[in-house]
Length: 432
Ligand code: EPU
Image 1 (cartoon, rainbow, N blue to C red):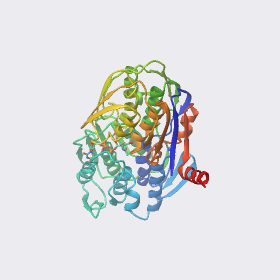
Image 2 (spheres, rainbow, N blue to C red):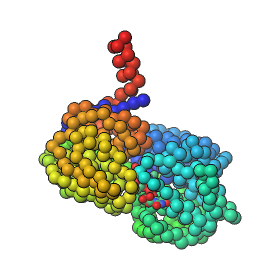
Image 3 (cartoon, helix red, strand yellow):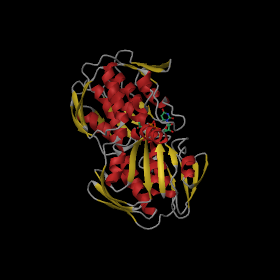
Image 4 (tube, rainbow, N blue to C red):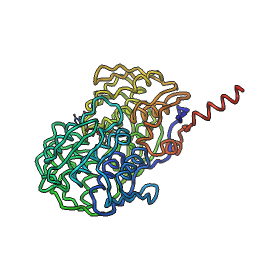
């Protein structure tokens, strides 16, 4: 068991480099199942969700070669199975992409219902409706999704998303890319990782247009070939470092970013009195004066991302005045609030609304991470709080942040990764 130990209250300075996007990587890696050649994927983040999805591909019979820390080659020509077992699938949300990818490749998929962070009800009805629209027979039995294309290949169709779902949009693209005929996805989600998945598939020979708008057209092709592709930088990892500097103060260059993807976050930070300068593939964030209050409503891209809501809340705990957050995507994304109160934050929650009354200071306390972004927000609050904050259950955070401790140390944070067993045996030694 490990935990983070943070001595807060120190401004951050220097530069930090952002890794590849988690939510692109966990879709692009399963997408390699659709290719009849070797896919070389670069800028892959080293995080536990990626390790897990690569392991699932290996279990299915794909050859996975780690060329270096951030490059992987996947050869799916000898897949042995279209069935993904419960013990692997349940550990992550993105295992749902295996349904679309296997169905698109083999006309058959049996995948355990996905797991992932507890953010409230997380249905996959829109995914299943999309597969049905493409002609698949779909059922859920014994905790598994069974999807079959009756004649071995799906047929292009019109798909209307009742809600602009990121996962369902990407899954519909995966299933449609090798279908017979053209598919049109309306009210599609527009997040940067949707464009990234379409670009990856097009590099491998797909014919997808319109990704990044609300209508995506997929002309089915017979086969996809191998190729080389580099994943985009992680919008949310970059936003998390922006928020860390906003909360703790300081002056940091955040490198390897697409500044356009950060507009929805930087616009709010600027309202709060944080200075953000844009360069080609970097942003510089400076916060010297007090933070000002603001209101936030989370929305699909290009709105303010729900995956940044807890981190910005950490900043607002220390802003002058009262801020209101309206969580527009997930029903259970305020589980960090009880932990923030242990630091001295003033927050009231009523359903989707959180009211944060800024305080002059937070003071360190032991905290427990409860999901990925809540955990990241606790790190930010710990960096801004006076004294020591310890964060346990860090496996949630490691699902999505590569080398968080080293990267934060690189910009001057006093944060350590501590083995709790070592601490326990030290205490036992002292006691003996
Ligand atoms: N929804 C349905 N039915 C569906 C699918 C979604 O009703 O079949 C609803 C959800 O309940 C939610 C809304 O639609 O209210 C949007 O959900 P979406 O499908 O867009 O979310 P997701 O694909 O399950 C991805 C990210 C999440 C991120 C959301 C929103 C991955 C693996 N996960 O989830 O990321 O919060 O999009 O942007 O890409 C995270 O990284 O911490 C994380 C939770």
